[in-house]
Length: 121
Image (cartoon, rainbow, N blue to C red):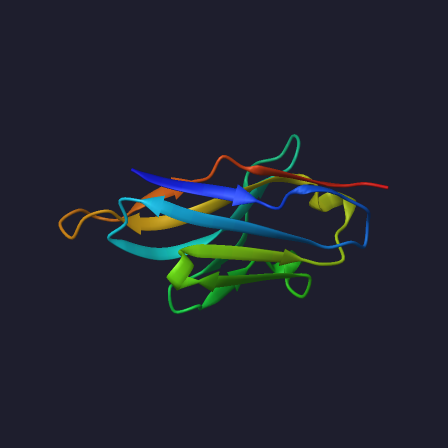
């Protein structure tokens, strides 16, 4: 089993910043890409950003310039720095990882429990 534990959510005023963290643990043979998705109230889950083990990154076009994803492979962790937050960024943010738990099994997708980010004055 693989566990992803997120932290860093909370309430922030518009224009503020937050940094989300996610650490993977468990039966990890190879940790592939990691990233963040979010689900706003009444909306479908959407991609925020991903980073490969080589730190190649992808972002939702609407978030480029405000959000930055980074990884620490030694710590099996991924981070999301969110700046200039807006009320429309309010959502539950989920950590995601593509993990291979065995050399003989294909990689699988794993999700964290989610952390609430609320942007409000």
